[in-house]
Image 1 (cartoon, rainbow, N blue to C red):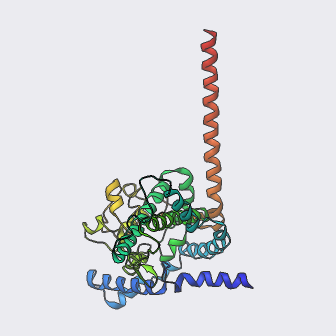
Image 2 (image 1 turned 180 degrees about the vertical axis):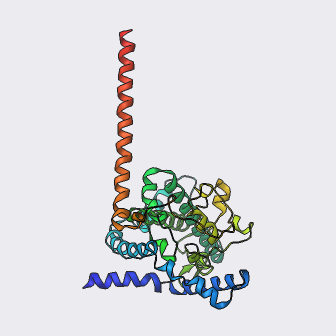
Image 3 (image 1 turned 90 degrees about the vertical axis):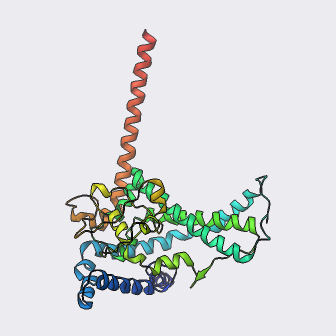
Length: 336
């Protein structure tokens, strides 16, 4: 019975915990932003704007239904896996003691810093390093075939809804969970070592103020059919909903663009930035004329393992062929 209650609490926490992306208040604010966008920018009537936002063909599409199913399954999987994953406190403790071995560092070397300065600096540092790590991991997800096999599950969505953020393979979920632990450990251990025992964040409802602002400013519209665009100069700093939707586009010019989570700065620095464009329709997914089987749960969960196996098989075959060719060349050389 405890398992069922724990599972129910884990599911419900996604909607009632301000630390979670789909916290109900963030969803409601996103709806208000979308209404404002359609009425003020698109000159829609209130009725038409509501109809556009609550398009049931989108929310009950095969793609969306897969999002919902994956959400429930992955919550159960992570409930089992999370307790055995290394925590940020374990990593932070190891890093803290490692810092003692660095000669040019000393404990509490900045302990006289004003507490408010420490809080501001820590809040900015943690948000920045977390966002940068998301960019790096996300970019590797697209570049390395093994990781792309996993991340492809997310990109198989042909329609975006706020629940698409949960459309991930469990192994990708574990990777991002470990990423979060590492970044938190780096920020916590380094600040406690340098500034003393008391470091804290500027928070609203227990959430880093920058994460809170990101969420109330329409983070849930990124995975949606509502292509809100920012001014071009703003899109060099923050990823707009329309920019992230381009990231899901199958169009060649949109491939490997806009990897950023909240900040577009990393895309701008590393050359993967693509400004949003006005579009009537945007074809989403992995490839043109994508098969409906890509929404089949069995395929979504098992195909990545098959692709990873095939990848290693091809690599091992190439390696064996190289060894054979090398042996042949050595034999010819020795005979001469």
